[in-house]
Image 1 (cartoon, helix red, strand yellow):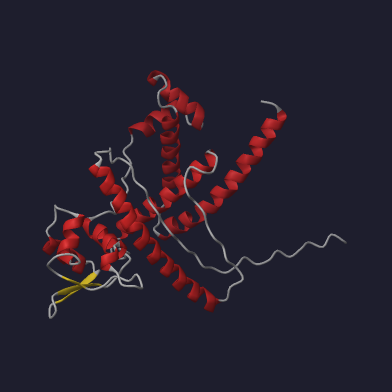
Image 2: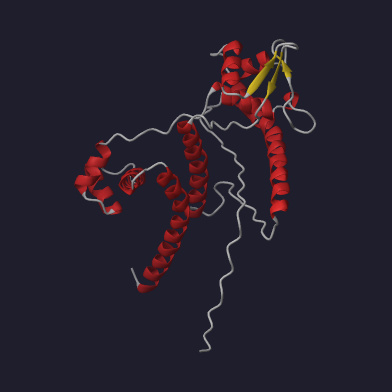
Length: 284
């Protein structure tokens, strides 16, 4: 490796470490809030390194795998062997019949009004109804049981006088279930990060991954911006939801292997702009 190549690699590594530092700060804040010690995080990083190296070595001689992973990661052979034998915690489940029904309700044209907001629907009967909605989402859970679960989660209310069901929350935030909240964090942020990493390692066109930044806003404007973002999300899911369902139906009708998944997300973060750096006076 010549000096120019070494210098380029060093520059790239420093840029990557700076980006990783930015990514780790929110996770460090979360871990400190829950009393997770640095040693536990270091262990998870070791596991991640070994898993990534193992994936990169897929197809290599199995007898040389431990040595190859050791060389790639900088871990000793004994450490690699220990890590491969250690059971790690699984990511908490986030998907359920209730969350699927909520997504379907908020994304199908017949279940939202002109403002893209979910409408109240009859409990029973043909679509649009809760019974029809439940049947379209799952055949394993009865509509009555699903309604009871969504009432328990404080997602819907059953108006007995009119026998209609109304959504109380059109966004599922499991605030009373910490593991599930962290599960959503892992799946949503994890998939976003994986898409970005794949693009960086490729030509940048493997996955759609873009962001829009607007600064120099007032606090009052941020409140209005948040309302605009919420409207855009409603438009997105009610437009894409039926189209994605049509693709799934077409795959099923054509007997194609339905072994792929697409996750589409939208996030926003509002915070104070960083203070401008004060220029250093070099005249003295």
